[in-house]
Each structure stands twice: as structure tokens, then as C-alpha cells.
Image (tube, rainbow, N blue to C red; front, side, top):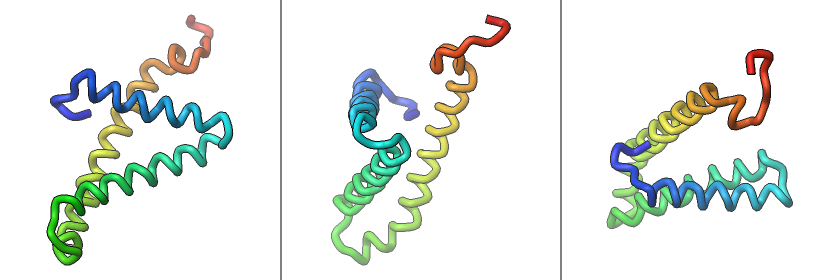
Amino acid sequence: MPKDADQAFYDRADAHIHLSNEQMKEAIPGEVSASMLFSSARFNTWLTAAGVESGAELAAKRDENVAYSVEQYRLALLENMDNYIEYFNQYMQKKTHND
């Protein structure tokens, strides 16, 4: 999560999650996930391209931007996995023998 995340950050993320949940009414979760990942990659590529003047400049920034995006995804995934590990029963509404 960005250090300066505010409520608007979470509202935007929740809007994407809500859209994915709606799409799962007509598609399997893996397909929805693949579409979400693809759209994120497409948007981030556009964002990088919007900040340069040429395809050559975009090519020069390619590896740096891929590394940055992959690292940000890795950090977000780890944060969310750790959160789900900690609150698994609550989030997944499962009971254990200790509950």
C-alpha cells in the first residue's frame, strides 16, 4: 500500500473489486482475475507511455517500469495475503475448533 494512501485510494480499489465481483456472476473467478491483471498492466503501460515522447524512450524505460510494477504488485500481494492469513476465519466465515 502506498505510504500516503487515503480513503479515496481505498474507494478506488473497492470500485475495482466491486466490478470484479459483478463480473463473476457471468464468468469464473480465474477469468475475472486474468482480466483484472491484464487491465492493470494495460493501464500502467499507458501511464508510462503518456510520460514519454517516443517509442524509443518508452523502450528505454521498459525494464525499469516493469520492475517497479512487479515489485509494487508483490508488496500489495504480500500485504493482502498476510492480512487474509491473520483474519482468515473472519473473512472466509469459517469456524475452527477454537472458535
